[in-house]
Length: 155
Image (cartoon, rainbow, N blue to C red):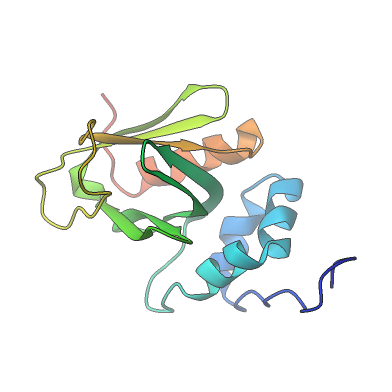
């Protein structure tokens, strides 16, 4: 329990895939994920039938939406579970690229017309989303590597 917190942190699921995803990150980034209630809740909500490959804490900033949440890589998709905007999903087959585009920014480029894509509606740039990430570079590289291992074809 934190210094000013009245509720204990949400326990992370005791799953091998979650352990591997956290072990692939820098230890401080994994600790942050464990200690932030909204991130732990989002990770706990991932169905056990889905294998988690990598996770990152992220913030999306759009003209009409600022939301923090959990970016997650599974064998089938990259997802973002935001506190306010809900769940966005980008199937691996719809992804064009996932890469850093500057210090602290991870861009997810996708085919907005592909089946299964769920993103923020009514956006100017409909083919990509930029996420602010505070994770260390090795955690971001691990995340991108896991997207590529899920089947993203590099260009």
